[in-house]
Length: 335
Ligand code: PMV
Image (cartoon, helix red, strand yellow):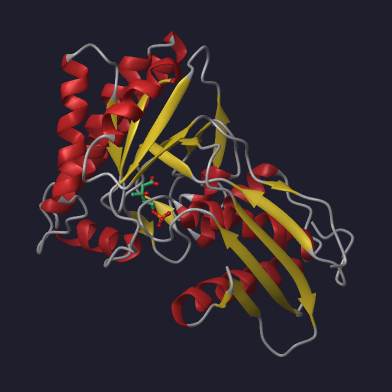
């Protein structure tokens, strides 16, 4: 697995966030980040994260997120991830990491998916690891589960895998046939969430009486969604995505005490999408670990959806995303 090591150069990678249409919510192994069920997502063509990595002879990793040095848990997460890359590569050097996110961080907009997909791609190359896309997906998963899917462009399925094996839990791209989808992101609050998805997932698995029912229905949703993609049935796919997301939020609401990410503004957006549907627009909601709502619709109808949601007082900004590219390395440089 070890290849040519380039240690006096910056290695740069770019990755985009992905939004799950069939959600990952809950782990069967916390350390390896093995999920309880398969998930399916669309990688976006907006909000790229660019990450540069260079090996150094300093006594510790140095991490900068945007203009500021990373401290506390964000620093520790990156350093733990780099420990894993060092273990895989058999190299001991520390690294300098500069990462630049264009998506609001920790607002349920998949910043960690783009972040760890970019870091996995850049760090693997900087440490001389030659990993294929499957191995990169497995590595990215160890930073943040959903990052396993951002290695791929378009639509991807993250296979949960079996037992306690690390090897068979990775994402792979899937064909979206003739589907021409868009995700209209309605930002109602770009601030960071108060409960991390990691903590909220654990709490839901441990205390929600609805949890295992949702896992069973989510597996059935994924099979149905694959059928919709094969038939090019965008509205069918949207209906399944909406019920899957609302089911995930229902499991959290049933946790003891409840975990609630959706706000009054999120519900206003959801109600407006229901109205759009009644008026004949094929639009369907999904939402993650934050109050921001994403609306799945056809590329043709995205402008109508964006205009209607953009007119709501509670919506701060609207971004329309189409299927985007997988993580990729840019050229190496000395500066
Ligand atoms: O990968 P994490 O730990 O950021 O968790 C992501 C969880 C959801 O965004 C809510 C669902 C998903 O599948 O992306």
